[in-house]
Every structure is written in structure tokens, then in C-alpha cells.
Length: 252
Image (cartoon, rainbow, N blue to C red; front, side, top):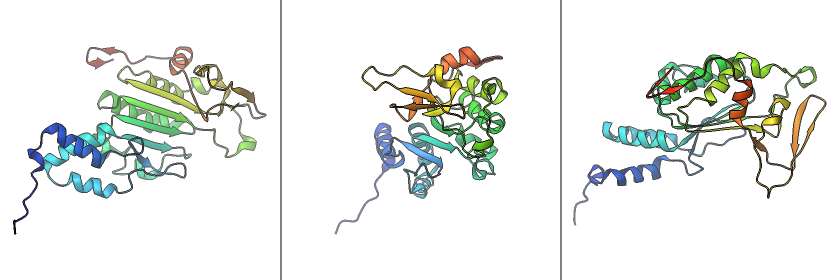
């Protein structure tokens, strides 16, 4: 009886090794890896311990596997809670200092927010800017969900929101010249400040009907749940302060 022989994986051509690793490490659900799960999302990669096992095979395997994992998956950060989840900001979390090296390797990121407030300016915004300037982040999608319904009866809309530092930090991030693809979307129920910036829809789609409720929120009917916004026009109208300019390989 012939003895079984070990399969020499690293004898395969690099292109074939990468294709095999992608089959194992890249999510089949639109290539998404959920960093923080909530009721709106279910993780497509259910066995993350299996990925860790691949990483721990050897140093060479880690180099090749992690390159595929971070470059080809889209990482999803659901930050729609009132505050950023503790496990993201605590030691070893995705937004922590210890995770900076891994964070910088992410190429595609989708973020879901309810509000752009102080935590975005202090924590999330600087981390994202670092991922662009010092890392590999080139594809960013930001979805701004419906305004928080907590304290709806006493809530008052802030007409100057777009002029405040947190939103200005968001506009600077969206306009970073090192980002190759940027999408900014708002939920069909959104602040009226976004209404003039709806992207034009395809002529074959139904005509949208937009109304303003008694709380001063715009409600879009007969259209998609998410409305793509013209972020360049937003930056042009509301952006203030110094913008990032790409000169050669440096930013100023």
C-alpha cells in the first residue's frame, strides 16, 4: 500500500496559491467581513477561527494568506449605536492602538453610522484617515442611517450640523485624494440638509416623492431605501478649512 505523501502547497505557482487562499479566506457574501455585528447584520464568515488556523500554519503562509484576506474582503463596521462598541476601542479592538498595523492593511471598508458626532471626530475619523494616509484603504462606503429615534419628542434638529467639527472631519475624509472610490449614502428618512445633494436616478426608476414630517425630517417614498449623495457637491458647498492635497507621494 502506497504511503500518503504531504502536499507541497508552496511548490504551486504564486497565482494559484492566491486563488486557493481566496477561496478559503474571502467571504462569499459580497466579500464582506463584519467587524461589529448588530441586529441589522449577520456575519458572512461564521468560522473566523478557521481563518486564524490558516494564518498560524507558518510565517510564509501568514504573509500570503493575510495579504489576500485584508485586500480582497470588504470589512463592515456597524457603528449605529449611540457610542462606539467597547470591544472596538478597548485593548486589541479594531480601533485600538494595538490593532493599528492590521487596520492599515484593510483596502475596502463600509461604515454604517446613525450620527456624526464627537466620537467620529476624536476616534473613528482619525483612525480612518490613518488607514488612508499610512495604509491601504482605497475604497470607502459610508451609510448614514436614520436619525436616532431616542428622545424623539424632545429632539431638535441642528441646522448648523454640517458646519460643526465632526461633520467637517467627515467631509475632509471623503475628499481625501488617496481614496480611489467613495460612496456616501443616506437612509430614505434623513435630515433635510441632504435633500439638494441626491444623486440623479436612472430614468427607468420610479419618480421619488419626498415630504417633510413635523420633526423636520425628509421622507423619500417610491424610491430605494438608500439614497446616494453627491459628496463632492457637499464638500464644495459646506467644506471649510484646509483640504488634503496629493503631491507626488506625500500629503500636506
